[in-house]
Image (tube, rainbow, N blue to C red; front, side, top):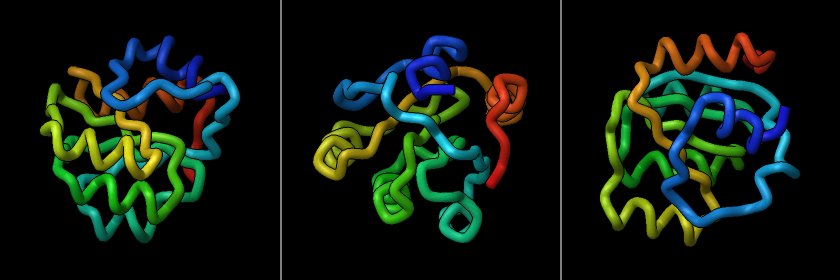
Length: 114
């Protein structure tokens, strides 16, 4: 499943600059609100689901070379965080849905953990 299909199926809002999401195939999913857990558990090219919306999520996503970060529960990053994500090539997406529901939907679509 491509990142574009995930964006469409989950009706996610793109917060950062648009890319060719149809050519990106996420490898796995991971859900955690602790940065240290995400650093230890999320896999390269995966999708990280979190309600955190501060600038440090960009550093973690860039370090792990994630396909995207889905920010849940209506949390919104500030302009500096979005700007940093664009500079680092990190895709930030948002949804008003809870983390649990978002992870469940990704599971239903066939995305599994690493």
